Image 1 (cartoon, helix red, strand yellow):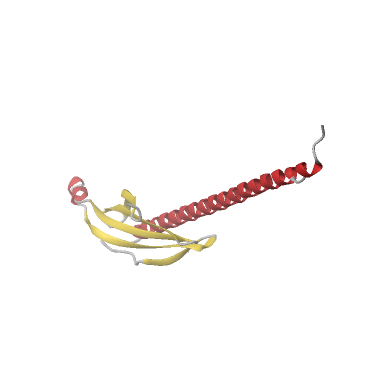
Image 2 (cartoon, rainbow, N blue to C red):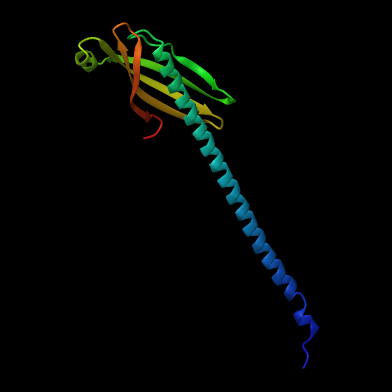
Length: 160
């Protein structure tokens, strides 16, 4: 016996449309996931650039300390652009903490040591910012010439 053609009409179309709808939802979900991953990786890249900018601020402040008189403090370095990345920048400040008595005692007064704290903030697009702090010891001879610059500590101030 043969079935009536009216009963079979449209079933294949309905199943195909249902499968296409499910595929469309899966595609939209995959696109949203990819867009979110792309935004997160971009934010991580900008955060990394801000960290590099903050480190550049610390390095520049250390270079300035080498040229500063004993117990002197270089001027604060306001917003400085990163070479090759004009959207990125940093600013840093140096604070004189005090003399290190152990160096003078160990060298019978022929050397001195000054302790400094350097605070640097790096900035990048999308509001990325990283704040660093470094402790530095500058060792000088009796004439005031810099013999060494030793980093005592380095830490991020923008995270708990």
